[in-house]
Image (cartoon, rainbow, N blue to C red; front, side):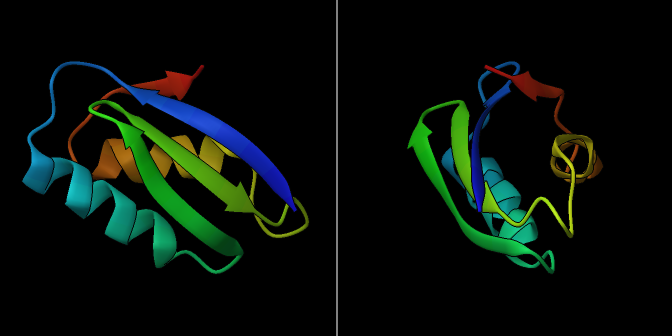
Length: 69
């Protein structure tokens, strides 16, 4: 398992962060996703199933810009 800290641009609302975390957890290959700050999500994932870009794409699909920290 790999871990990555994803930064979300802007100031997402708590509801927005919840939506992002839920979407990440729904991905096959994500073991854990949790908000670690108002605009950060720590994700533990299987690199055999997903790439960091897959995770960032999922965040973007929720309406937010994102990148690795």
